[in-house]
Image (cartoon, rainbow, N blue to C red):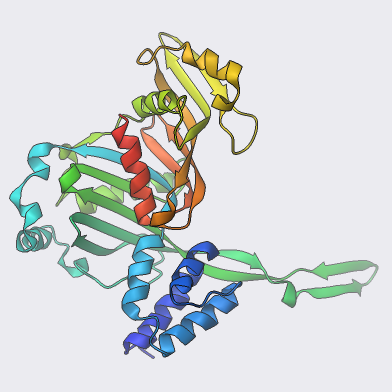
Length: 340
């Protein structure tokens, strides 16, 4: 039966999307409404109840999904956009943007509602321009298995052998790919969920640019220097800062050096002798090959947590290894950009 009312659509969105998010993020949504819970089942009941009594509206869930779905746990590519292109008048005029969208052949996804579909292949589902940002969104279905002990079967004898059956339940999920352009900062970013070592990753990037190029041509983009970011971030964290390097590899003039901590969750700067050796490397004399840097996701933008971020200088990409909110991701990216 088709979904017709806002309440029905809210419940559908909650079931198909919200429950696939990390528990800590669902708790944030429910805490705002005075109902939390401890398990996915509790969350489902509390969400339905809040929707039924009007405490939680469709708009609340749609806004929440846009903030948390598919942010983090992804590879990120950053580009500087040419100033001449970013300052074009059309980026300050909604009607001009709509015309450009029609010319690009993307009118069917312009301003679309938060997608509930689980398409089998990566599909462009939404294109929007809000709060000074142009945002493309793609979705793709996936699934994984979760343990369901309540459905386990006790050991049983079959002939001379004893068998035990442990139950797993299949749960649907979906991947989200994004491209975001922020004219005011003259910056663009791609957010790719597929592993970088797979053909799917390269295919996703090609698919993304095939859609994006009509509005933000690739020739207007200059790749962010991730290698330079590694060396400068590593220099900066040697002084008191809210981030620290766990491992880093720096190279220059045909040689390289690596620094690292063997203690999970700690930076190498916490060992005085190693920090002193690192300080002997003059800033600007090396570039970064790889690094794992620990950042603090700000509590004012979502659940506070320590986030491990891996940098790949030669490949020009960043891998965020934890779920975050959209605001937290951009706080992190702005911090990285500001130091380079």
